[in-house]
Length: 66
Image: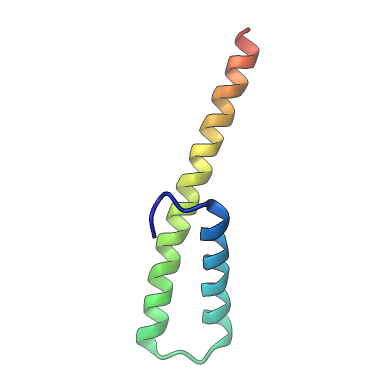
């Protein structure tokens, strides 16, 4: 996964992983791989949300400074 992927795409994949972990009878190795991928996706989503929040705060500051 790259940081250039859209937030919605990352979130969709994270949802798929969550559903797989909850519903399928996975072997330990597969479950650990999916969990690891999910953690990475979660971090990427969090970074994107933080960047969006920072941008919004910057825009709000620009508007109130004028």
